[in-house]
Image 1 (cartoon, helix red, strand yellow):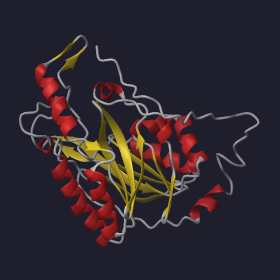
Image 2 (cartoon, one colour; image 1 turned 45 degrees about the vertical axis):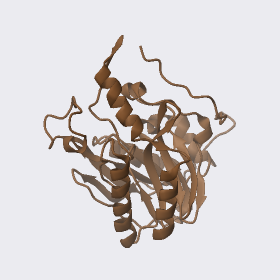
Image 3 (cartoon, rainbow, N blue to C red; image 1 turned 180 degrees about the vertical axis):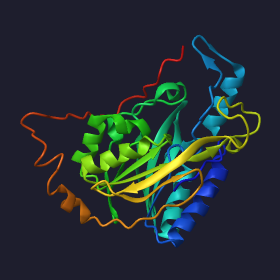
Length: 301
């Protein structure tokens, strides 16, 4: 699903999510993947009034708006997603901004028809994201068995962390979801490499986001006008041998469809299995600490 949020407006974004999921379901989709921070939304171009040594009152108010638009897990929005998935008989992978206490996290929610399965919290926010998002831990690096396959998600530049990718491969991920905010053309070869490396299907999606998607009165350092494009998409679906099954799509909201034949995965692993016959565990070992830990946030100075 390549679409943009109604930034800082959770209710309107969830309404949009319902409408778009309905369109996808009518097109035959059984799994619908939304971009990073879709609810509600990715703060592209915002500085929240921060420089080293100072924060402004206006920036604090922007953070409050962001906080108010975030999702509680568990909470009523989870029930709404469960009901939607049940009504449309779809599985959902949704990028959200999650709040716990006074901290926000960039998370992905997994929902099957009628049931919330779990979440993944981004373990390493990138650059200025650390001003507004906390750090996830190893307890949410899960892969979920579903009726459509074993689904996992790795968010944006987490995909550049080899050991994190390896953790997902070792859990037997078949449908590797890659919600991102990176809409550069260089992202497509990244996810094609991941599909080849992990011998899995990769579903990558980014928002198409414009200045007009932000509320009036919130200054944006990267948008010169309401028509300014801040993120241009690039959604694609990739086979276990790196073949583009759909996309990439650019500069417009759209839904990409592909039929995933899970039998392609063992065919692809015939000559390369990164956690099996090609792994050399006598030389290499991966240790993942999956302990749930107290919140870790960046120091705001």
